[in-house]
Length: 300
Ligand SMILES: [Zn+2]
Ligand SMILES: [Zn+2]
Image 1 (cartoon, rainbow, N blue to C red):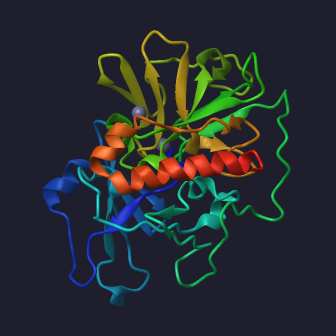
Image 2 (cartoon, rainbow, N blue to C red):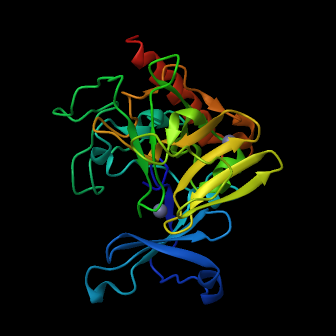
């Protein structure tokens, strides 16, 4: 419900206590993602998630731990080694299926908290998850963590599913603060979106409604995020009939990839050049991972 498929972050301290400067925190908005446990800090102007604070469960655990969002790092090469955590919550492996290994080394895929639970196999799905059925009459509910941004999507007019996209461009990265594998969007015709379930109130592209805040990331591109919880909501090229809706907002029963609504068969990584400039190993790993994911979907 942050709009992203996962949160990509690195701990800022191991032994010593790190605490961000008060002036930095004063410039950021905050939202409690997990009650009394995890607080995210994001830019009030553009919605980029910058920091997360994990509050200790017991007072003796000192001040808790601060994390920086990986997508905010100007250079990420050799800065961290990824691992997937809480994969079970996705029901379908989510974006963990896009990154099985890096540099020939496989990446850990923890069901829940690392080292406390078992690891899951590649492309794991929950054994009792509900069947994927593209029902023509159903509507897809999209909303952010705080519920301030809330809208409904009808099926595409001329096909069964919407196309999913994954982008490595700097603009997408800096809009949410996450690495490329988390920034999936679905390309949706704005005429298929409404603010109410009955479909009476059209989606006002480029306009702000409820807690939605917009800004132009370039003269042609409008991006929307929730001013209360910082969720990425959409990006839109001015003059086009479509918006790219953040997949992490979609409420579906079968899993994070929303496969009853989204087509992942032709998924590839857009704007790889931006990713290669700052996180070469990771970008190459995601390109290879997506290629293998496509082949897996085709049963090859
Ligand atoms: Zn919100
Ligand atoms: Zn992009």
